[in-house]
Length: 375
Ligand SMILES: Nc1ncnc2c1ncn2[C@@H]1O[C@H](COP(=O)(O)OP(=O)(O)O)[C@@H](O)[C@H]1O
Ligand SMILES: [Mg+2]
Image (cartoon, rainbow, N blue to C red; front, side, top):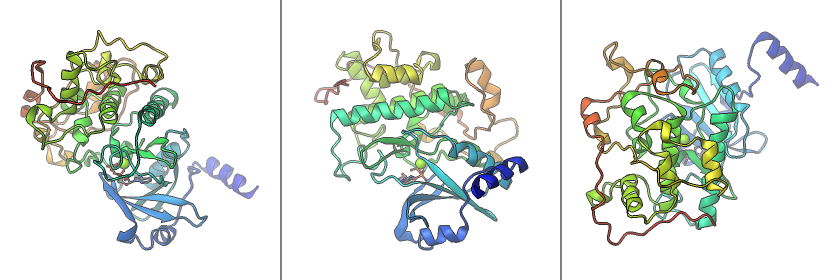
């Protein structure tokens, strides 16, 4: 077959065998990137809905950061991501690299993200009953366990949050944006302060000390679990102060033993080592493993994340920036090292706003008691 022969030739010449689209194809698919087809804007750039030549619908993500990577390096990364297949991961069809353009083409998912549906505050008609929520939690856990434990080398997602969980027409959850951290130049950060809530998902040790391990993803996953179970987003600044932070609220309920086996709390413990692995989480969610809720310690929480400065590296003094590489080994012996630079910097103030005391006396009179039921 011709295509196979081509693939073989590419392999021989070292050119990654990833599907490439022309810029013209992208323009046609999105009707010239028409605002009417724009479905979102995130830390990486704008996302358009589009129809490809073969009739398939696609989510077309135009990366805003000018890539410092050469075409070959970029294609190599895309090749790796596009070969990762799992029912709980969004499929990357391919990309477009023409001149400075970097566009990613993903499978389009009809039911939007968890941020806009379950947690979005009534903008959708989807009813999320307990069975559905449980299936969604298990699906996300399976997808993340796959990235953490099966894909070689392991992938730390770094941006697990409700808007990166997309739902297909049967409400099967699919994790999006994995493997992207390496594509953006180190002087940019995709963790955008503009995107409300993003920082609420960051594990304290990652946000404050730059320690990046799989446990940081597990923390974010824990926050997401609590959001899915409660149906609200992790920070709500309009609520009274003691109700603003969902994790803090959940801990209060847990201390009063109103909350049974909330795996989210297990995952968000301050000490990364105490957080379970994703494969254990899958077992717990499925009821195949007991949740030892006597041992859960207080969640790590950054309360005043406005103080957490997310700055481009280029504006910082040399040597003042923490890199994941330098702090990594101290925090974890077994996780694979991530060699990209973390461009999160924290002010001293952020460290001092770290919540270490959470009162169990704070009244929680008329709260909905959310119990995670494994039906
Ligand atoms: N594959 C996809 N299918 C459908 N919608 C998508 C897809 N990918 C992204 N989107 C939509 O585009 C929005 C922006 O995505 P993104 O650029 O990844 O930013 P973020 O994840 O920070 O919201 C998402 O919130 C989602 O609503
Ligand atoms: Mg996204």
